[in-house]
Image (cartoon, rainbow, N blue to C red; front, side):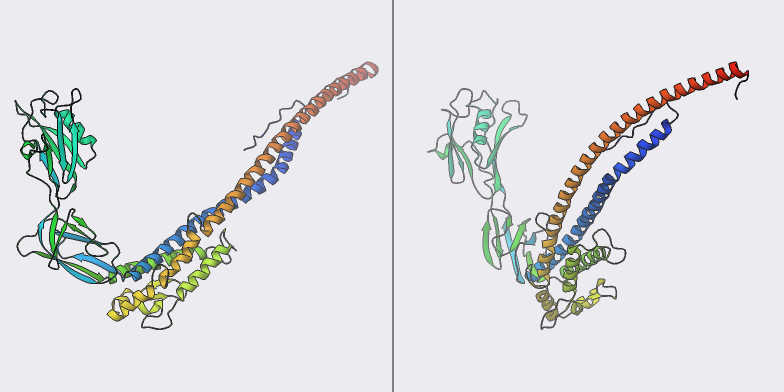
Length: 455
């Protein structure tokens, strides 16, 4: 709530002095409000600094969590020797392995059939002798009753099939034929072998109104020589923790090798992310400490995070070929800045690389376990920073309330003082008028009595 300055428009010679009195009184009364507004500005600066800090802490927590995940699943990466035939992705595998896919004789496709004969009209040509048909989707059977008025036609049949929610969709095609242009096409929603039939007489297969050209197909292939059949091309229940996606059949002697191997590149990229996140947070914390400390100077969160960074930088294992960050290329300069020597990392032996994965641990242990500490600070719902910001919001609300009260009080004081000054000005103006009249009378009397006019 702002304060509108009031202008004093007096008629006495002292009106400018009255304006100065009004301005001075308002300025003095405004001082408590200005102090509260300064506190608000400080709170806003702290909230913004905490928000920036939370983002940096969250990035570091994410980098550490990623390293923990790499350690837990041994930094596995899945690859396919021919991605035009099969692609592969991980969904939980944690052990190196190799598999061979061959003889992909079939790709999963949805069933799709059309009516054997066309129809001359959507609504006038009957599709069933008695209006009752049996619709079969694989082993599922459904009765279609089209006996209702106006339903025993192609449009009514389409609508009846779609109302079943049987995992198929019925549509009508217009071929443009002058006599019988309309055909019903029924397509399964999912891939897999499931014949579609539409029988006018359930006991007579010869009354099927649909073609039998495309009953759908399953994916059929061999994995390490074993035949596998699935109704979908995306397969995640054959190799534990691995999802395969079949794209086409193989020809001749084509085969695909699926490899699960520990990837140094994944770890190197994750370590680079750790370095960037660590240095970003360290820079922000440094800006809140020392001689020119920022708005969070003395904040317990800042000191706790600094302690966590020290613990992270000095973390080590009691034994093993990899005990410290420096053993695999993570270094610190004299300013405490972290860097990553990728050449040293890639020069590690396979045994040492496996030890690095042990050092990384998991999301709850080893180096990755530090993610929990930083997440406790950065969690957007229950984290320390969020709690602190909530306190600041509450304090800001209290300050707003106090400022509103003082502002209303000041406005009333300003109006009251203005009214009093206007009354004083009016009285002074009257006195000044009387003084002028008295001066004129004295001058006239001097002229009459003494024959002279006083200058």
